[in-house]
Length: 351
Image 1 (cartoon, one colour):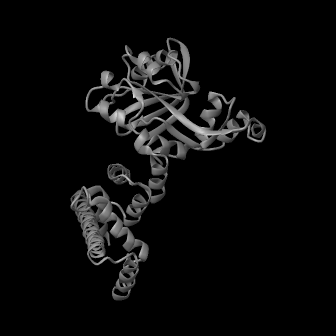
Image 2 (image 1 turned 90 degrees about the vertical axis):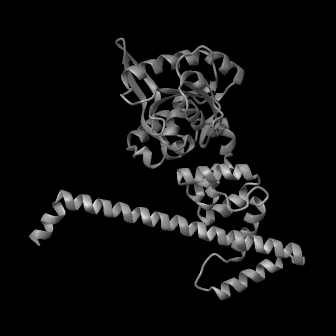
Image 3 (image 1 turned 180 degrees about the vertical axis):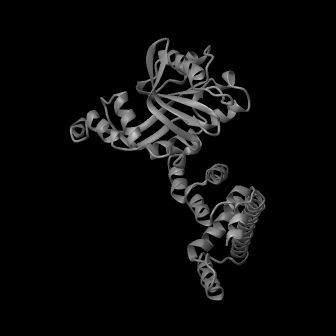
């Protein structure tokens, strides 16, 4: 027993076992990927065969029911041959075959249930591939995939008005542009017509997990009303994040109304200070994001024209609630107290 303990503590043994674990996990991952590719090739073949037989023989949809039933009887130990699944195989082939000879790579890397969701909710091949790529890259669950499709992520992603092309080096500028959205869908919030920035900020903190999902992968939450002392004066950033892919801090300022050009000057000031006080060796320049209820693209572009710091401006969408309902909602003070009772969890696990 003493010898076994000594062996396990040996640096040589630990290095050996670490290498062994890495090799096993790598091989297992390759087996999973290969198996998934084989399954999708089979599903593509089944879908193609059914479509061609229907075209040549004039069979209707009833033949799919029969094929499903026969396959389940013949391969009773295997799953995946339900009526809806076999119909989806045919649909997958008909959907992608005009442009692709085989299953597109990102689609073939998704779970079959995700692919069926994609086929049911997206009607354009290129848009479907966009969601497939995002799904694989971000390891979305089926529920998140559905939510992103319903929120039309393909329209909002990379659409924020920014000056990144002039203020950030390539390819960092393109990556930063792609990460920002316009508009941001905060449909999980309910704001009265006369709400203030503080109301918006508190509700976002109450729904931090949904907020991080709306922002996208990589945003790590560092704090709200984040303090910075500049020339002996205290300033407070509405929200501060660190983006793990961009390797930079992200300052978010919340504006409940329409965009105003003076917001840019204030954000430029905050970014200069953040670069001096927060930025570490290896970090990229701090990025600013101004979230407004509404904006005019021309006004934003004009305001950003000669600004030297990387700033983006986006709008956001929330649920509007009538004034007579406002009295039933918690006050700002009540929300502040409730937030003080909540310990914010590690945001990177939810982003």
